[in-house]
Image 1: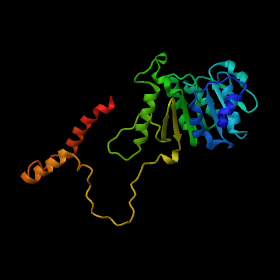
Image 2: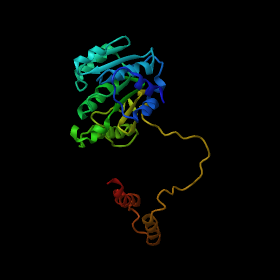
Image 3: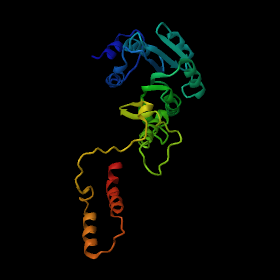
Image 4: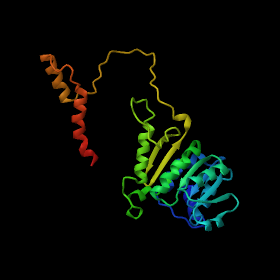
Length: 266
């Protein structure tokens, strides 16, 4: 049994966690243990989770809990700080970071609504230190009718958009950035069952560049489209007749291929 799981069962305060979360947390957070970090958890509930994180990360860590319910102030004690505020309110976050400064980890276990999760990402991501993490849990609410989902504006659809956002740092021609782009600080996104992890490091968000070494280059023809019956047929036809020289076979071939791939996206 992992140390995190042991802390969970030993805690004298109430806490709820899905079984698969423990292994995921270990994979994400183990490298931060016994280090001088600032850990923030949104959603205090019965206080058990903060107590677990206090023991897991060690004495060097600064543990902060955030909740909308003022009653959660009672969980403030040595080694645990409590802030009361609305995670979907940009003003709250401005005041919070002005007082606390940049943090290493934010774990969103708050209200789990689309608005709360999306606005938390947008209002906090740039206040996370290089090498830090923003982890949003219970993202199964994006498929839950009780939370008005599934719909186009669910958190999980927002997170999928960030995959495009991260890839848009590649030097494509004529590609537009998202209005609320975060690819200047997020270099990767990992998806697990009910958890999304945003990896933060501004130094890794530069535009990619192609590097070529000085090794010997042989004249090997690119065969990526040689398996296409269309390309083969047109090449033979062009060679034989000399017509259709200006036809862009690759575009036509990709169009036909994409039609055949449609069935995999249902």
